[in-house]
Amino acid sequence: MTVLVRSGVGPLCALARAAIPSIWRGNYFSSGNEAAENNPVTPMLRHLIYKIKSTGPITVAEYMKEVLTNPAKGYYVYRDMLGEQGDFITSPEISQIFGELLGIWFISEWMATGKSTAFQLVELGPGRGTLVGDILRVFTQLGSVLKNCDISVHLVEVSQKLSEIQALTLTEEKVPLERNAGSPVYMKGVTKSGIPISWYRHLHDVPKGYSFYLAHEFFDVLPVHKFQKTLQGWREVFIDIDPQVSDKLRFVLAPSATPAEAFIQHDETRDHVEVCPDAGVIIEELSQRIALTGGAALVADYGHDGTKTDTFRGFCGHKLHDVLIAPGTADLTADVDFSYLRRMAQGKVASLGPIKQHTFLKNMGIDVRLKVLLDKSNEPSVRQQLLQGYDMLMNPKKMGERFNFFALLPHERLQGGRHQRNARQSKPFASLVAGFSELAWQ
Ligand code: SAH
Image 1 (spheres, rainbow, N blue to C red):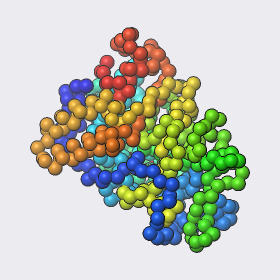
Image 2 (image 1 turned 60 degrees about the vertical axis):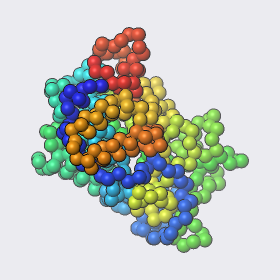
Image 3 (image 1 turned 135 degrees about the vertical axis):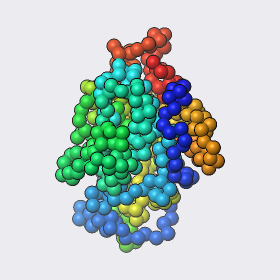
Image 4 (image 1 turned 90 degrees about the vertical axis):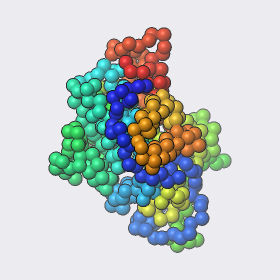
């Protein structure tokens, strides 16, 4: 893959990124049993205790939803939890190369499907806007390729705080932003490079049209229901008030079957499972949109293929955190079940993956891009940061194997639709999708 070298994507010098803490969210497993030093009564804990006293124990999914995205007190709503000073670090915050290669992926798909005259770039859960910023820089640098294409950016974000950071990063407020808190499009503006950009709280409010969707470390924050196999059958894990200790929560098992059991496969062999109905709803919506109007979705996250059991865990200050302690002050997350995402897409669109992050990035040409940036940088600290970032993203013991890439594509894309260009007929078309095989410019 030589296009990055020839076109010199992005500034030739490396961009400053946060120092890299040694912990990322894909790393640990916990059922919330770590000894807690103390149990401060946070406003969220008070709210949950009141709720449980009024209406009874709540599901883990309801707990996650309240703790993370409650509009008044939710963890994601009013804080910047990313980076060195926050609670966890993500790949785009570690290295600019990550977003650059994803930008190349979208351009490669756009070219392979007939170079439409317009597309929407839609990101779910954009964090600080760093990833979409790196992607847009690639689009600018490859402006000669994209010159006749109308691009717009659409961000799906529930966090007021993070949406403000995204707006500042991406628009530098060169043109004043339009705000309307009551509207499904709650903010609108123009990016630094002149691209229209809009913010929404829900995917279903994003206009339908030819789109490329991106979800990086998004599906892992969606609420999961947890189930334990018992002699009486599946029983859902609930959260209740601990009768022994004041202001403390504990896990309990439901005494009888609950509706979310419908999400468990009939032939399930594990004795503990986590199911995420919200992930299914979003994959169905993405699949319907892609089947109707074309485009693609790229999902990158830590997860498994229907094999793991108890992965619900919390993070605070780059440390593992008991999920039931001081709710609202720590991130909550669970591994993504890619086998479920694949099932929800089946019949509507084709899916590829999950494949390991190190394989995907290797196929996208990470080694070439790293070499270009190293060759252009004389600053030892920058070179060291580039190498450390590469190690974090690629090392199988770090993010390289824990993170996976998964794509949704229209069936025609893999069957060689009318737009397929220069396809070598002897190879299956799936092998022509960049990242899932070596990138080949067409
Ligand atoms: N993709 C970013 C951030 C990951 S953190 C990165 O890789 O750096 C999760 C992101 O999803 C945050 O931006 C958070 O505010 C957002 N988020 C969490 N729950 C959401 C929901 N239900 N709908 C939309 N965005 C959500």
